[in-house]
Image (cartoon, rainbow, N blue to C red; front, side):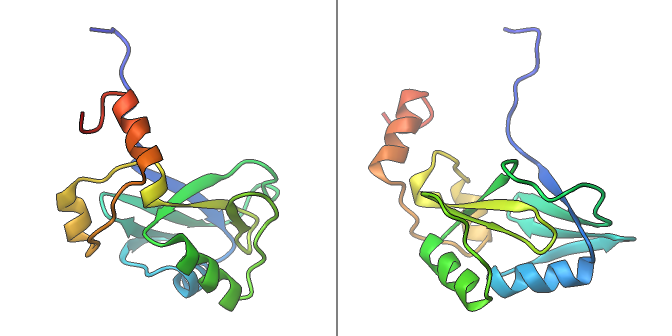
Length: 148
């Protein structure tokens, strides 16, 4: 056993935004949101067993390459929601966009990545029938994380 701790996952991501209410409205126009709670100038949005913290008060310049990836149940529905909201989709092979405060978000489909939630968490989120692609299953098997 290693004397160093293992990384097990991400509990949350914190984003700086100009205004929390505006951020909730922006992200709510694209994604189905469940507000976990608010505290002062912060809002917490659930993603099953994880969350995003939106903090009011932007202190840095917009991000060029730095980004984080959100996993969704339907990438194409996300693309349509972004287009309907008038959000510019960034050039490239993926589905990347910037929020009004310059945070760069990359959207990936749950079926196409090795990221996995337990059946219980998916059920609790009201998500059914998301089968991993063969490529994602192969990645999981290679790491000893998927069915043999």
